[in-house]
Length: 258
Image (tube, rainbow, N blue to C red; front, side):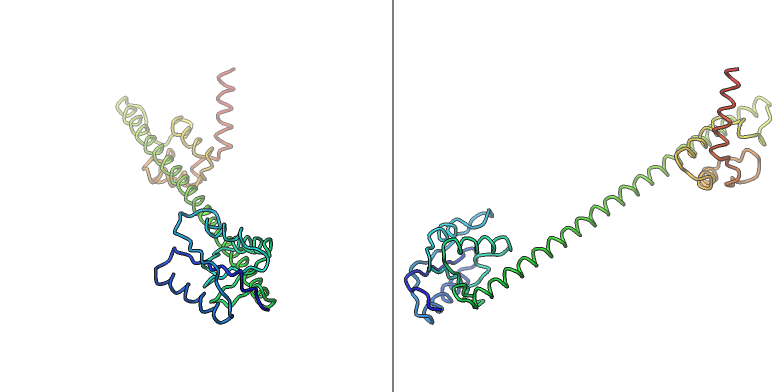
Protein backbone atom coordinates (compact mmCIF):
# COMPACT_ATOMS: atom_id res chain seq x y z
CA UNK A 1 0.00 0.00 0.00
CA UNK A 2 1.38 3.42 -0.96
CA UNK A 3 1.14 6.16 1.65
CA UNK A 4 0.70 9.88 0.89
CA UNK A 5 4.09 11.51 0.95
CA UNK A 6 2.81 14.77 2.36
CA UNK A 7 1.83 13.73 5.89
CA UNK A 8 4.55 11.80 7.77
CA UNK A 9 5.35 12.92 11.33
CA UNK A 10 8.27 11.47 13.29
CA UNK A 11 8.09 11.08 17.06
CA UNK A 12 11.19 10.63 19.26
CA UNK A 13 11.29 10.17 23.02
CA UNK A 14 13.94 12.33 24.68
CA UNK A 15 13.87 10.36 27.95
CA UNK A 16 16.81 8.21 26.82
CA UNK A 17 20.49 8.92 26.18
CA UNK A 18 21.66 11.26 23.41
CA UNK A 19 23.01 8.29 21.46
CA UNK A 20 19.66 6.53 21.67
CA UNK A 21 17.82 9.63 20.46
CA UNK A 22 20.27 9.93 17.55
CA UNK A 23 19.72 6.24 16.72
CA UNK A 24 15.94 6.79 16.68
CA UNK A 25 16.28 9.70 14.26
CA UNK A 26 18.63 7.71 12.01
CA UNK A 27 16.25 4.74 11.85
CA UNK A 28 13.32 6.99 10.97
CA UNK A 29 15.25 8.78 8.20
CA UNK A 30 16.38 5.45 6.75
CA UNK A 31 12.76 4.20 6.69
CA UNK A 32 11.57 7.34 4.91
CA UNK A 33 14.38 7.08 2.35
CA UNK A 34 13.62 3.41 1.60
CA UNK A 35 9.96 4.20 0.92
CA UNK A 36 10.52 7.48 -0.89
CA UNK A 37 8.68 9.41 1.83
CA UNK A 38 9.45 12.74 3.39
CA UNK A 39 9.21 13.49 7.10
CA UNK A 40 7.38 16.80 7.32
CA UNK A 41 7.90 17.30 11.00
CA UNK A 42 9.83 15.70 13.90
CA UNK A 43 8.40 15.90 17.40
CA UNK A 44 10.80 15.35 20.31
CA UNK A 45 9.17 14.58 23.64
CA UNK A 46 11.10 16.34 26.39
CA UNK A 47 11.56 14.52 29.69
CA UNK A 48 8.56 15.07 31.90
CA UNK A 49 7.22 13.79 35.24
CA UNK A 50 5.22 10.57 35.20
CA UNK A 51 1.61 11.32 34.41
CA UNK A 52 -1.36 10.19 32.33
CA UNK A 53 -0.76 8.93 28.81
CA UNK A 54 -0.22 10.38 26.25
CA UNK A 55 2.64 12.77 27.10
CA UNK A 56 2.01 16.43 26.17
CA UNK A 57 3.79 16.59 22.78
CA UNK A 58 2.44 13.23 21.68
CA UNK A 59 -1.09 14.29 22.60
CA UNK A 60 -0.80 17.39 20.40
CA UNK A 61 0.69 15.34 17.55
CA UNK A 62 -2.14 12.79 17.67
CA UNK A 63 -4.72 15.57 17.67
CA UNK A 64 -3.14 17.08 14.54
CA UNK A 65 -3.15 13.83 12.54
CA UNK A 66 -5.51 13.82 9.58
CA UNK A 67 -6.86 11.06 7.35
CA UNK A 68 -4.03 9.33 5.52
CA UNK A 69 -1.32 10.90 7.66
CA UNK A 70 1.26 8.69 9.36
CA UNK A 71 3.06 8.75 12.68
CA UNK A 72 6.47 7.05 12.53
CA UNK A 73 8.56 5.94 15.53
CA UNK A 74 11.84 4.04 15.66
CA UNK A 75 10.50 1.46 18.11
CA UNK A 76 7.14 0.67 19.63
CA UNK A 77 8.25 1.21 23.22
CA UNK A 78 9.05 4.81 22.33
CA UNK A 79 5.34 5.52 22.15
CA UNK A 80 3.51 2.92 24.27
CA UNK A 81 4.53 0.61 27.10
CA UNK A 82 1.29 -0.73 28.58
CA UNK A 83 -1.81 -2.45 27.23
CA UNK A 84 -4.09 0.49 28.12
CA UNK A 85 -1.80 2.87 26.20
CA UNK A 86 -1.89 0.60 23.12
CA UNK A 87 -5.70 0.64 23.16
CA UNK A 88 -5.85 4.42 23.55
CA UNK A 89 -3.32 4.94 20.74
CA UNK A 90 -5.36 2.71 18.45
CA UNK A 91 -8.53 4.63 19.28
CA UNK A 92 -6.90 7.99 18.51
CA UNK A 93 -5.35 6.79 15.26
CA UNK A 94 -8.65 5.31 14.07
CA UNK A 95 -10.52 8.49 14.99
CA UNK A 96 -8.06 10.60 12.96
CA UNK A 97 -7.87 8.12 10.08
CA UNK A 98 -4.08 7.94 10.45
CA UNK A 99 -1.65 5.07 10.62
CA UNK A 100 1.39 4.11 12.73
CA UNK A 101 4.81 2.95 11.59
CA UNK A 102 7.20 1.21 14.01
CA UNK A 103 10.52 0.81 12.20
CA UNK A 104 12.23 -1.74 14.48
CA UNK A 105 9.20 -4.02 14.71
CA UNK A 106 8.43 -3.60 10.98
CA UNK A 107 4.82 -2.68 11.81
CA UNK A 108 2.87 -0.43 9.45
CA UNK A 109 -0.80 -0.18 10.37
CA UNK A 110 -1.48 1.50 7.03
CA UNK A 111 -1.20 -1.94 5.42
CA UNK A 112 -3.39 -4.97 5.97
CA UNK A 113 -0.49 -7.13 7.14
CA UNK A 114 0.84 -4.37 9.39
CA UNK A 115 -2.55 -3.84 11.03
CA UNK A 116 -2.83 -7.59 11.68
CA UNK A 117 0.65 -7.59 13.26
CA UNK A 118 -0.28 -4.62 15.42
CA UNK A 119 -3.52 -6.30 16.51
CA UNK A 120 -1.51 -9.38 17.50
CA UNK A 121 0.73 -7.12 19.54
CA UNK A 122 -2.32 -5.59 21.23
CA UNK A 123 -3.59 -9.06 22.13
CA UNK A 124 -0.21 -10.00 23.57
CA UNK A 125 -0.05 -6.78 25.56
CA UNK A 126 -3.48 -7.44 27.07
CA UNK A 127 -2.45 -11.00 27.97
CA UNK A 128 0.76 -9.77 29.58
CA UNK A 129 -1.15 -7.13 31.54
CA UNK A 130 -3.70 -9.72 32.65
CA UNK A 131 -0.93 -12.12 33.73
CA UNK A 132 0.82 -9.31 35.60
CA UNK A 133 -2.42 -8.39 37.38
CA UNK A 134 -3.01 -12.03 38.30
CA UNK A 135 0.53 -12.32 39.65
CA UNK A 136 0.11 -9.11 41.64
CA UNK A 137 -3.20 -10.33 43.08
CA UNK A 138 -1.58 -13.63 44.06
CA UNK A 139 1.31 -11.83 45.78
CA UNK A 140 -1.13 -9.59 47.63
CA UNK A 141 -3.16 -12.63 48.70
CA UNK A 142 -0.03 -14.34 50.00
CA UNK A 143 0.98 -11.19 51.88
CA UNK A 144 -2.47 -10.97 53.52
CA UNK A 145 -2.33 -14.65 54.46
CA UNK A 146 1.16 -14.28 55.94
CA UNK A 147 -0.02 -11.25 57.93
CA UNK A 148 -3.04 -13.20 59.21
CA UNK A 149 -0.85 -16.14 60.27
CA UNK A 150 1.55 -13.79 62.00
CA UNK A 151 -1.31 -12.08 63.84
CA UNK A 152 -2.77 -15.41 64.97
CA UNK A 153 0.65 -16.63 66.11
CA UNK A 154 1.05 -13.44 68.12
CA UNK A 155 -2.37 -13.95 69.74
CA UNK A 156 -1.54 -17.56 70.65
CA UNK A 157 1.78 -16.50 72.11
CA UNK A 158 0.04 -13.77 74.10
CA UNK A 159 -2.49 -16.29 75.45
CA UNK A 160 0.28 -18.69 76.41
CA UNK A 161 2.20 -15.99 78.24
CA UNK A 162 -0.96 -14.85 80.04
CA UNK A 163 -1.69 -18.41 81.22
CA UNK A 164 1.87 -18.88 82.43
CA UNK A 165 1.77 -15.54 84.25
CA UNK A 166 -1.46 -16.51 86.02
CA UNK A 167 0.08 -19.85 86.96
CA UNK A 168 3.15 -18.17 88.45
CA UNK A 169 1.01 -15.81 90.48
CA UNK A 170 -1.14 -18.71 91.62
CA UNK A 171 1.87 -20.78 92.67
CA UNK A 172 3.18 -17.90 94.76
CA UNK A 173 -0.21 -17.45 96.46
CA UNK A 174 -0.59 -21.16 97.18
CA UNK A 175 2.85 -21.42 98.70
CA UNK A 176 2.26 -18.32 100.76
CA UNK A 177 -1.01 -19.74 102.01
CA UNK A 178 0.59 -23.10 102.79
CA UNK A 179 3.39 -21.42 104.71
CA UNK A 180 0.87 -19.40 106.70
CA UNK A 181 -1.15 -22.54 107.44
CA UNK A 182 1.93 -24.41 108.63
CA UNK A 183 2.90 -21.49 110.87
CA UNK A 184 -0.58 -21.63 112.42
CA UNK A 185 -0.37 -25.38 112.91
CA UNK A 186 -3.01 -26.19 110.34
CA UNK A 187 -2.71 -29.32 108.16
CA UNK A 188 -1.35 -28.76 104.65
CA UNK A 189 -1.56 -31.18 101.75
CA UNK A 190 -3.89 -33.85 100.37
CA UNK A 191 -6.83 -31.49 100.24
CA UNK A 192 -9.52 -31.30 97.62
CA UNK A 193 -9.41 -28.63 94.93
CA UNK A 194 -12.55 -27.19 96.51
CA UNK A 195 -10.40 -26.30 99.53
CA UNK A 196 -8.28 -24.00 97.36
CA UNK A 197 -10.75 -21.55 95.81
CA UNK A 198 -8.04 -19.43 94.20
CA UNK A 199 -6.49 -22.42 92.42
CA UNK A 200 -9.93 -23.66 91.44
CA UNK A 201 -10.81 -20.24 90.07
CA UNK A 202 -7.62 -20.03 88.02
CA UNK A 203 -8.17 -23.52 86.56
CA UNK A 204 -11.78 -22.59 85.80
CA UNK A 205 -10.60 -19.43 84.00
CA UNK A 206 -8.15 -21.44 81.86
CA UNK A 207 -10.77 -24.00 80.90
CA UNK A 208 -13.28 -21.26 80.06
CA UNK A 209 -10.72 -19.76 77.66
CA UNK A 210 -10.62 -23.04 75.78
CA UNK A 211 -7.34 -24.37 77.22
CA UNK A 212 -7.43 -28.18 77.28
CA UNK A 213 -7.08 -30.16 80.52
CA UNK A 214 -3.77 -31.57 79.25
CA UNK A 215 -2.46 -28.03 78.65
CA UNK A 216 -3.67 -26.88 82.10
CA UNK A 217 -1.81 -29.80 83.69
CA UNK A 218 1.31 -28.97 81.67
CA UNK A 219 1.24 -25.32 82.73
CA UNK A 220 0.70 -26.18 86.41
CA UNK A 221 3.61 -28.65 86.30
CA UNK A 222 5.85 -26.16 84.51
CA UNK A 223 5.12 -23.49 87.13
CA UNK A 224 5.69 -25.87 90.02
CA UNK A 225 2.16 -25.74 91.44
CA UNK A 226 1.89 -28.70 93.87
CA UNK A 227 -0.91 -31.20 93.15
CA UNK A 228 -3.76 -30.90 95.64
CA UNK A 229 -4.06 -34.69 96.02
CA UNK A 230 -0.38 -35.30 96.62
CA UNK A 231 1.99 -36.86 94.15
CA UNK A 232 4.69 -35.11 92.20
CA UNK A 233 2.85 -33.85 89.12
CA UNK A 234 -0.49 -32.92 87.66
CA UNK A 235 -2.16 -35.21 85.14
CA UNK A 236 -5.04 -34.37 82.77
CA UNK A 237 -7.26 -36.54 84.98
CA UNK A 238 -6.22 -34.41 87.97
CA UNK A 239 -7.85 -31.38 86.35
CA UNK A 240 -11.64 -31.42 86.78
CA UNK A 241 -13.74 -30.86 83.64
CA UNK A 242 -15.26 -27.44 83.17
CA UNK A 243 -18.75 -28.94 83.67
CA UNK A 244 -17.72 -30.23 87.12
CA UNK A 245 -16.41 -26.85 88.21
CA UNK A 246 -19.53 -25.09 86.89
CA UNK A 247 -21.77 -27.54 88.79
CA UNK A 248 -19.73 -27.02 91.94
CA UNK A 249 -20.12 -23.25 91.67
CA UNK A 250 -23.87 -23.64 91.17
CA UNK A 251 -24.15 -25.74 94.32
CA UNK A 252 -22.18 -23.19 96.31
CA UNK A 253 -24.42 -20.33 95.19
CA UNK A 254 -27.49 -22.36 96.05
CA UNK A 255 -26.09 -23.14 99.50
CA UNK A 256 -25.36 -19.44 100.14
CA UNK A 257 -28.88 -18.38 99.11
CA UNK A 258 -30.46 -21.00 101.33
